[in-house]
Amino acid sequence: MGELTINREKILQALSTVQEPDLKKDLVTLNMIRDVEAGLDQVSFTVVLTTPACPLKELIRKNCTDAIHAHFGAHIRVNINLTADVTSTRLGGPMVPGVKNIIAVASGKGGVGKSTVTANLAVALYRSGAKVGILDADIYGPSMPVMFGVEDMQPLISKKDGRNLMKPIQQWGIKIISMGFLIPPDSATVWRGPMASQALRQLFSDVDWGDLDYLLIDLPPGTGDVHLTLVQAVPVTGVVIVTTPQKVALADAVRGAAMFRQAQINVPILGVVENMAYFTPAELPNNKYYLFGKDGGTALAAQFDVPVLGQIPLVQGIREGGDEGRPAFLSEDTLTSEAFRQTAEALAQQVAIRNASQEKTKAVEMKL
View (tube, one colour):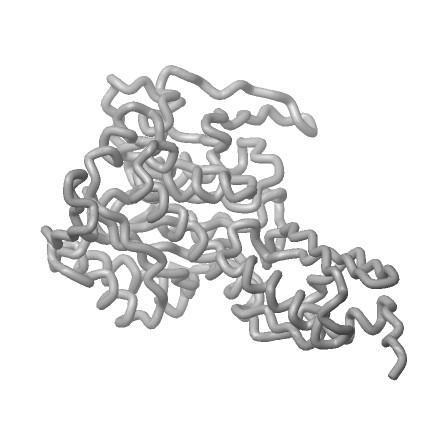
């Protein structure tokens, strides 16, 4: 039997048998295969992943290699270049036009570590190869300037298309804008609802964010004017709910999640992050102590039929990192770094699934 001729068409035919594990369609149909080249006994091509943080990239690489070998023989050398182009379903618009995905990070109550989770997820996504920004929309208690060690900085103003726009502060690779940059930290500011809403709109419209794969919005605790303003001002890709395992935190988190599920708002919930899920002492690295209860975040996720994106341990270094202006993901603590890395991968995965399977994102039109 003669050797099979290897050409582009036959290579694509072989790769059309490989499914993207999350999107449940084959790589060719999803237009994820590019730059196909055939040699005498070798093939090379590029697989364009839906996010650089794809947790299944090595599985996809193996399945592609297996498909080529099954089609042409085990002697064929397979060179696969993995790259990424983060997907988006945003409808553009005048607000933040270069941002592919806007992800709100919310919690039912304060003190659950929502800002800490936001900061570390941002850095983990950036380290995976994505372009990431944070808008600190916690008007009443902005904490990103402290968490990134930039509390003494102020955004520069630049002219673009005849308008004066703020340039985000960049630290640890993340573009950051916060009300904390614009108000002296020692001055008490009393915000009425409409004032807070207007301030948030300006943080969107008067900032030159440039191109971003993910813009994380650190929301104030609870539900209120700022949350409604967010979903009306810009098309939100989805929301992440942060909770701790205690009953009181979970009860508040249910109310927070339910707000986004309301028919007139209907923003997809991407998943739940359970913070302070367990305590592991440094001297007993294999032990887990569930100080605040066990699997509360899992129960919340089940109630709303969404995944648990991650369980973050209670580690002293996480609090210290926030106080010192260096997110804990960057520390030497592998337990912490690994927890945030896996959570960021799960978040990126859910964004890709959401973009492939749900309607385009658009701003909410509410008549209140």
